[in-house]
Image (cartoon, rainbow, N blue to C red; front, side):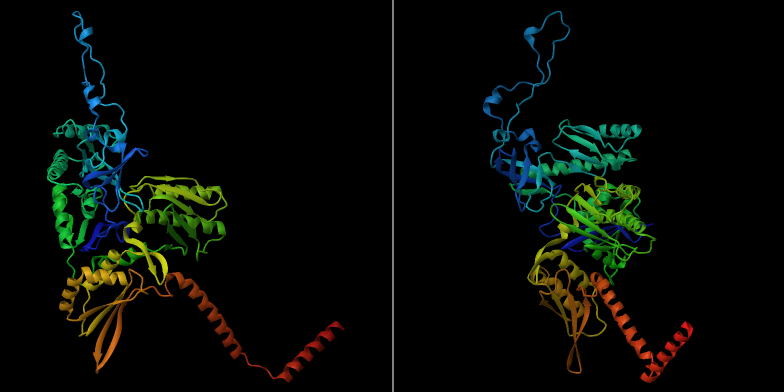
Length: 593
C-alpha cells in the first residue's frame, strides 16, 4: 500500500494533515488560527506574577490566555536568588583539608562535593516580577493553565538539545543494540557539546550516518544561539521562539522513508516544508510536492473529505452492521458498542464476539485519529465465556501496539467494562476544532468558528458556473457571518471578480456550524429563479434516522400488501357461503355415523 502525507493549508484559518495508507486514514491532525493554537514547545521570556508557598509553585505571566503553572522542581538553580547570609557561607565544590595534610602522604585527601545551596523553599529564592526564560510542556486545557519549565529542550530530527541541563550524552532506551548505541555515542562525542548542556539521541537516529547527526546537532545549537540573542533584546512577557508549525513537526517527528510523498496545498506551507526538509533530510526533499489541481480541493481529490467529516460524528458504523458511540467528557471518554443489524451468526455469543472484535479494531483506530487521551471506558457487548473476553483483550493490545502514545489496558470486568488509559500527546481533535455554543436556545458542542469558516472558504475557492448567475447567497450561522465580514472581505471581493457574480452572506441561526447552504439566483424571462447548489445540513433521513425510517417503510409495505391482498380476493355471495357451511356439517355427521 502507498503511504502518503496529505496537507491542506489553503487558508490560514485551518491546516489539516492526514497520514494515509492507500485510502485509509491512519492519523489525522488539525491546527487552527484560533485561541486553541498549540503552545507546547514554545519558548517565552516571562515574568513571575505570584509565588504560592502552599503549592511550592509559581504562577507565570508569559502572554497566554491564562497564567502558566511552574512547579519549584522545574526551576533551574540559575534563577535562585540566594539570601546574602547563605552566600557568605558558600563553600567550594571540591576542597582540601590542609590542616590534616601530612608530609608522608602522596596526595592530599579530597572530600566529597558540598552543595552550593541548602534545600530552599520557593518563597525564599523566587520573587515576584522576576524574569525567567520558560518553555511550555503542556498546553492549556479547560480551566487549567499551561504547565511550564525553565529546562529548555530543542528537538531536531535525530537529537534533542538540553542547553541548561548538564546531562551529558544520553541514548534513547528504545535503541537496545549495543553496537548501534556505541556508534551513536562515538558520533555524539565528536559534537562540540559544552559541559552545562545535555544531548539526547532520539530513536529516529537508528542507522543514521555521522554527517546527518552532526548536521542535526548544528541545527538545534543554532536555534539555541538565536534564542539567547532574542532574549537579550526583548521585554517580558514575549514569545522568543515558536516551535515548528504542524507540518514541520510531522516531518521532524513522524516522517520516515516509507512515505512515498508529501502533497501540500498552499504555496507558503509548501515552500516552508521544502526548506525545512532540505535542512533535516536533503535526500528526501524531492518527496515534497505541491498540489496544483484547480478543479477540486486536495482532500476531495484523494477522496478523504467524507472520511474526515465522519471523524467528527459520535456514531461510527461497523461493516458487520453494528456501531459504536463515542462520548467525551472532562473526566473520561465513554465508548458503547451495539450489535445493531449484525445478526448473521448462529447464536448470540458468536454475534457478540464478532461485533466486539470488529469494534476493538475500530476503537483503537478512532482514539488514534481523534487523539483521545486519559481514561477511556469501553462497554463491550456481554459475553458468557471467559475465553471470548481474553480474545478481545488480546485484540486490543495488538491493535494498540503501534500507537505512539503509551497505553495501559485493564481486564474486562463482570459488567462487561474495560478501562483503558492513553498518554496525552497534544490536544484532542475535539479540543482543537470544537467549542460550546447555543443553537435554537439549546446549549451544545459545535465546530469552532475558524474551522467552520475554513470549510466554507474551501468550498467557495473552487466554485465555477457554466452560465451567468445574477447572485450567489450563502446562508450561515451568525458567528460565521461576523467572522467572514471581518476577516475574509478581500477573499469575497476577489471571488466576485473571478466568477463575475455578486455574493451575499445571509445570517441563519437555524443552521449550526460548520453547515451552510449555497443558493444561486438567476433571471429567466424577467423572473428570478433560486436553486440550491450546496446543502450539507443534516436531514431527518440521515444515518441516525435511517433505521427508524426503514422500520416505518417496512410497516407501510406490510399494510399496503394486506390491502392489495384483500382487493385481490373476490368475495363470495352470502348464500353460497351458507350452503358451503351446511355441506361441511353434513359430511362431518356422516363420518361420525
